[in-house]
Image 1 (cartoon, rainbow, N blue to C red):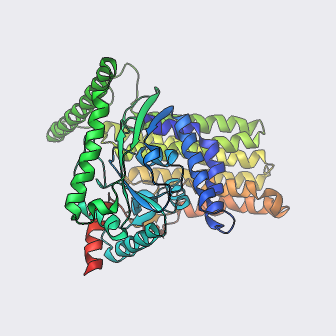
Image 2 (tube, rainbow, N blue to C red):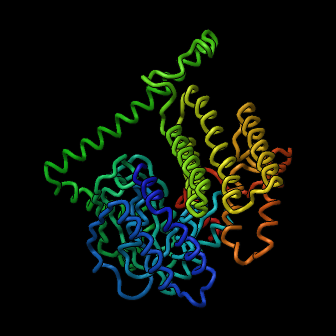
Image 3 (cartoon, rainbow, N blue to C red):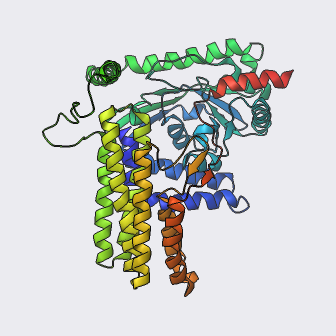
Length: 489
């Protein structure tokens, strides 16, 4: 995943440009047709490939039908699969994806650009509606991409179970089926390396409707799976000894990582058994030569602190734009920190230490830095200073409360936020800075009111309902099978 995070950090400024641009394309279909939207999506994917040093070798494009609609069925290995196919497929094609993945930032815009289909877990009515729409659109000439494995684990170049229900859409549409074989597609975002990586994408010979019309979905699934498996094995057999050795090293590192995680889990289990014997004072906080903890999530907190301190000095030098960019970068690093923190099982020492580091980092980045930005913009009267003092005091109170109660700054539970999140100030200052010329004389008054009002909402015990977001992994193909059967009945 290190390549994924590297691409985000290396493209941080491009994100601010392309996200509004994608939203503009999506909101104005009368100006930007399907072809233009798809080209924009391809452009963004190519930037990801270039920043991530990813090269995809493509064969079989001549197998794609020149006219009419069809459905591509590909094996699934990782996050790069759909991106690689979109970049190689010249004509606009849509993707069938689960609603959770499609709701994430940037992924949502990409799916909207290619007019993809979303399946909502356990909602048979919604799934049936989407399946009917896909069938109609394929008959009308659209192209779709489906991953019949529905999800992926650490399967690398091995195939897992194909869900037969996903082939009902092709059977109902009476369209050609294009098997797509992906080789090494797990490597871009599945191994911790920034070295150049090569993947393979093979469009296999189409299976015409006349060939499979008398088969049931299980037979079609077996046919497609065997063709993909044969192609993957053919590619693996052609590897040189050097390439095989490299693959063996990658597999060995992955297995060692799994073993390390298992060992950590076993160690945590053992430590819980003796936790009642050893007090917190007796347990060593760190085994390093230096004081402190240096896990990935803590290092990201340190990086956010660096941006906060650097931005503060920029504000003292009255360089408002530089200070504002540091504030935004600190915000995105904190988001990345939250992603890493939620994806790992950290030890109790790391969690306890990380909580304090996060609080101190947030105090500098989202407490002191916003006040210094206001100071640099000319809000330097005695009244403003009093407001700054109140704002920073509110930040301290909120962070201390959250640390003492073992809660996060985002949610009190699954549905509510308790008080206003600390990072709200980033959005407010950024939006006001963009609208500075439009607001004119009212800008100073609004900025003056922001600090005390936000400070009050930080420490006020209010419950703010979060947007209702689905959670968990969804099995799109299997859900599609259930929905299709329900639709037939």
